[in-house]
Length: 391
View (cartoon, rainbow, N blue to C red):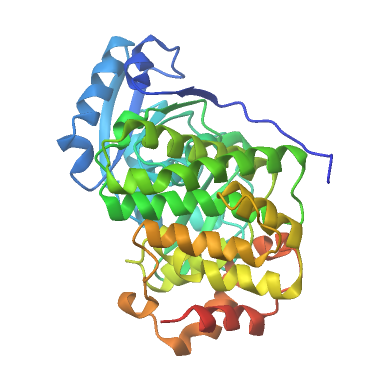
């Protein structure tokens, strides 16, 4: 067991049902907020936006709303949001929404205070890899979904349709100052998206467990998250109003934001980002589910981290697990309980002859995650995982 780790997460986390109502009593990092929401209707229809604006008013904060963020957020939306923040003289951001909104807030924070285009600063692919000259706007996150963990870390994944790239962007100075995780805001998520987001959170933790850099702290937290998600995700999918289930999934998701600070995820995430870079309508969690079994089986066949798979299988309820294949059994069982075991790449327009293209794109855009794999994975092997998973 690796006993070394470097942990510094300055985000204050207010976790629990009803915590949104405490926002107005907090010391906030500015006086005029850019309230960032998605371009959908749910945040307004469910009353979350009005409740947030009321709390900001209670805190003496003026607010303007930017509702331009879509699933798999685009570079152009980031630049529009940053320009809107500048035009309105906003001095901090309140990100109210799911993973797309939280991810976008990181990039908008940076581009509201720095010159040029976001891709000038992106590291990987065609990105310019320039360092940020100025500190970004402070961020307050209010997550309405349980999936990305972005509410407590300094990374967001942004898509560039022109170059067909989907790349993580971030910097330590962009980490949110305050995160509010209120599971009551998650009760209206439809079953399908509850499953997609829950599995995203699960894979953040399983990939940390598989990573060659896993350490005593990241493993301890990851196993706790895996246990909670495996036990409660089927309940949340079956009954969105099951607040107890929502609380446990939210815990597993937010704490994944911590495990990813301690230990990187693996190439499974790079591979899915390639999938949705080429097929923009593919939900991130759905893509991860599609390749998850074949991805795990690659390392099981290599005997790269057998003990880690057994630990995860036990955390997922297989108390007598004694072989790495038991993890795959537990994983498939959970997917079946959540109604997502039959997802097909072809249903989202992915063709089997794209496998090598996707493999190359995954390494070129987010090759750093391949370095976290427990053993080497060539482009041919990566393409082979896509082919094995293809339906």
